[in-house]
Length: 270
Image (cartoon, rainbow, N blue to C red; front, side):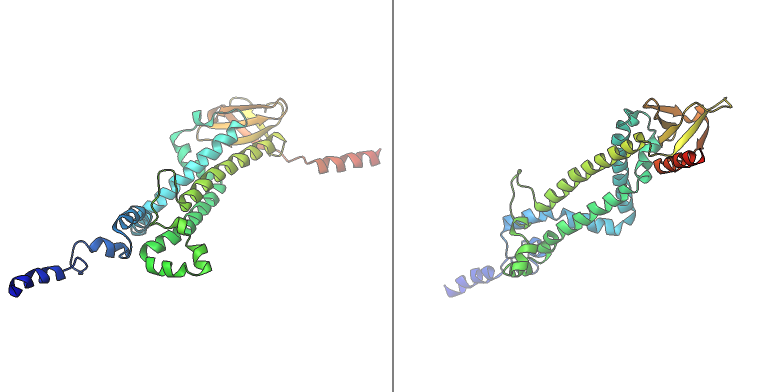
């Protein structure tokens, strides 16, 4: 009887925790052997950020392409609200090339992209580190600074429902909404400055004409096929095809300070 009981005992000793067993492989991959299998599988689904980062490191051209597309989207968003202040639907005048270079016209597009990337790295770094070193994070949470850096609410092993978003996702969502609102405000301020005669005055000459048009215009912007002008005299904005223009002459700026000095000088001469 002892001889018959020995084989089952030997089979039971071959636990799934052996290095070669297939059941232990997923837990060793993410370093969560002390976590339950359900939570470890959930953390696996949250590790997409690390996989994307590794893919971008292997293919830097893909990272540049994605960054360029984000900058272009930011530029189109900013341009839309800027021209909307002049009641110009810029999307109707944009060519395919204008959508691509829209973000390159405004340096704030690169600043906004940099802020988004920095916020994404800072917000996702604690969760990414806990995925790889859960034991160290649990030990650090016993200290006050560990509870501040590695919030239990932000743990990647915490199961969430559909309405319970992670802190890093909330930060990125708030950044997208807040940044989009700031771009709208900045576009409106730029348009208001042009209406207040803050732009460079222009003298416009149409094609086939030798004399410029009466009055001074302000340059709103350009596209690959149109030039957008604002006329302060009557508050009118218009889009002119580039073929319809012969010349745009930059005139010297007239500041209120210069006009006051000229008036004072005229009074003294009298």
